[in-house]
Length: 331
Image 1 (spheres, rainbow, N blue to C red):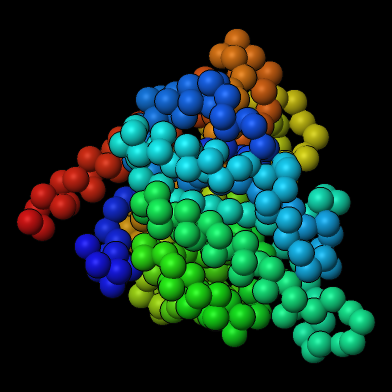
Image 2: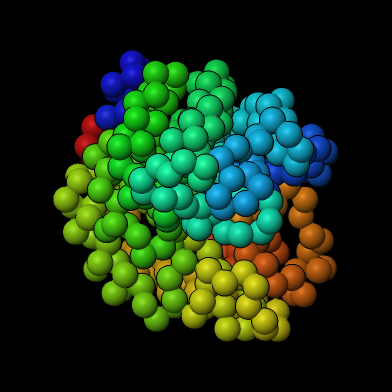
């Protein structure tokens, strides 16, 4: 399949899970990492995974992304994770992500719109970001990754349309597969350059009782740009109160498998009625799993051995059966 065919054809249902976060150097090479990915594939029945890892800049106004340094996973670890996923029959989205070393969320990376002498500049930051992304785009091409995610939840950068268009052009020079950008929740209709990517994706951390409203808001954007859409991230901690603020990983609350299960039931039910939602890359499955005996006390996003796990597995199985049936009818 040539480059244009790869970029123009996307008809899979993505029954996916994000694996490997946060991507600390050395953790992906450990034996438990392979066992973790095997358990993810077996227990959830996924057909895609996002191999996701972080690289650091010092703070939101720093202009150097230090992806070659610790704690970022090594290139060999990235290659090994892709190779392992492929051996399990999974398609792969490679998803390099920038974070700030001082703990500030990457959505707040920001600079003056007009260059000012002696101040950090967008041009310097995008030069570093382009070097970062092209490095992993080459690995994605080398390893046959099925999609590349060129950014995640970088809200303040979204307005820099010219720079993003140039980055996408540069990435296409080294990577021949489909490209997506993972915008943040509530931002789907704020990105003006969706036409430049192949697939629209976003973070679906919506309150349990607000899915219909948000899907109504997102749908016109998907229709306008005539692009496939899926949720590159979506999930809810297993914690009391989290279904109403599923994006708040620091929420104080007691562990609750039922809270997480309720959120997944609501999210899947709402999206099931929207055929333009072509799947999920759920958040998240770590490279080192807790034990099943500890699941009830674990209040994080992973649903391993929790009540939400069979909900995800059964929903994905249903959607993949429907997708296969639809493909069979069209042939």
